[in-house]
Image 1 (cartoon, helix red, strand yellow):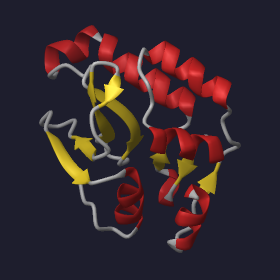
Image 2 (cartoon, one colour; image 1 turned 120 degrees about the vertical axis):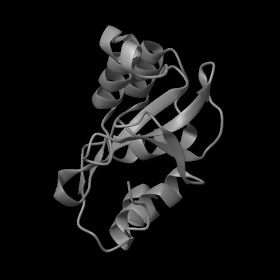
Image 3 (cartoon, one colour; image 1 turned 90 degrees about the horizontal axis):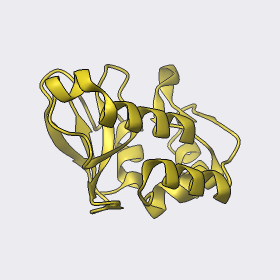
Image 4 (cartoon, one colour; image 1 turned 180 degrees about the horizontal axis):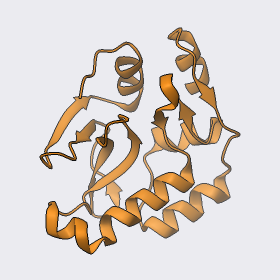
Length: 144
């Protein structure tokens, strides 16, 4: 479904080899949370999607893990920004801003996608779902 959706939008994107369920289980264990179903299903088709200019439209699992751990555990970040433990980063805008799902405890609170601004530490709604985020980002309807 995800590859077809992205290919159908007419932009050239590159797909990685798919993740498997054990990769996802390992990621969930390392992050101590459940990945949202939409992200899991995408990763099971392709472990990451590179969009125009090689931007991380959807990061591979290893980047999702590393980035989320880095942001949550960085002493420097804790002095500069509000806490990141209520966010699951999964993509970036190429300018330092990152897209995320909001978390409540160790679960995704809702399907909406938000963007975190690295310049002002704001967190803003961008799409009602991962599917709409992908469509709107590729179509240029999201600007950050």
